[in-house]
Length: 262
Image 1: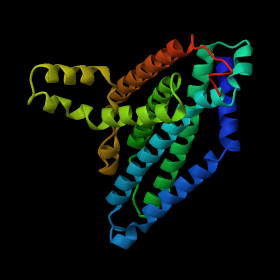
Image 2 (image 1 turned 90 degrees about the vertical axis):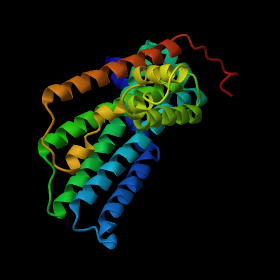
Image 3 (image 1 turned 60 degrees about the horizontal axis):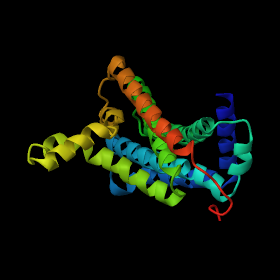
């Protein structure tokens, strides 16, 4: 665990040394400008639109950050040949995988908290507020979801370059979020192998819609029961463990040579 934390800290330092901080700053400025410009379209008095668009942008930007960061960490070690001194140290590949995942998850989570803080301030300036309990629940579920995104990106990056890993992670996460919730409706209109295939996908892929509390936050519905929130968080932790285990299994016997990394 301590070695994994050390690797995660290296990831955090690298984020500060690279241009990711500037990208985050640009996204935050775009986030604020879009929300503040809603007055131009006559929507300034309707805080519900500010909340809805702000939460949508928070989810979109955090998704992009989590996928891009997690999918490039391991391939970056290989292309820069820093994987060799790393493997020469008394550290297991499981600790490498865990440390990279933890670093990616913490960076994207901190950025997401910044987006939420900016949204709360803007909504407050418009004379409205979120239900604080529901907001805490929504943030907890959102951060857990970012852990899943990061774990999926790490899993694909163990056997692919960063571009391919990011592309597949985008496809899988977007499909799970947009298509899976509609599978129960679709299976009513198909039969045979197509129905079986849809059901397999429905039960095999993670259900990201469980982590989405945007509708409750926008319309100020009462908070969800904490028992339900805890069950979803446990489900999210199980999914993270599954993808991290798959990452370790794919990475533990991977062989590296100077020739293959050129």
